[in-house]
Image 1 (cartoon, rainbow, N blue to C red):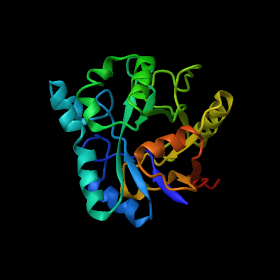
Image 2: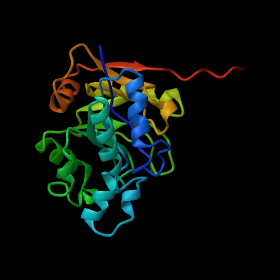
Image 3: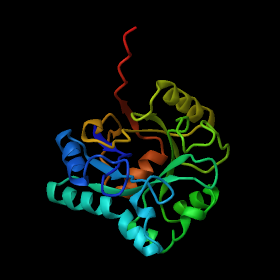
Length: 236
């Protein structure tokens, strides 16, 4: 089995990140992962990249975490892929993982995408060969106006049904029910912000994807198997 992390943050880009990109790469390498996707918070989320004025300058800051992780991964022999955690602040505040993109897409085809509708964003990501995953759809947080809002018919490719960062297991259970109702493939992610959170939830494949594109295709086709470490139940 080949293990991949689809949801993690770095301290270089995400304000809530507590571990450097290099330390995160080492953590997943030590855990025997076959690859990781860096999904730092985008400029419409909890990101240092929302500080600069110009779009190019924002994207330069946004890519710091990914570039540092990619450099460390190349040195260590761990594939590191580029992703985005996009917070749809123009609507409800829910989160989406954008996978299968290239960093250069941010400067050109995705310029000003923080202002787009989520429907338009999904279409644009698909045109660029990427996939869209609805992340922790039932999480309750201050920036999410209406936790658990559903968007029937939205063209997402999968739903994150296990997120190790969720505060309550009921959020994961509800996400599973949503995926079943909508007939969407399942994914899982650690949502790691610290080294000790690495590898708490991830996907596995029987066959090793030959590249990032095939990894995304495997997810879209429902080939991902879910691995998740449940949180301990508090003693009464």
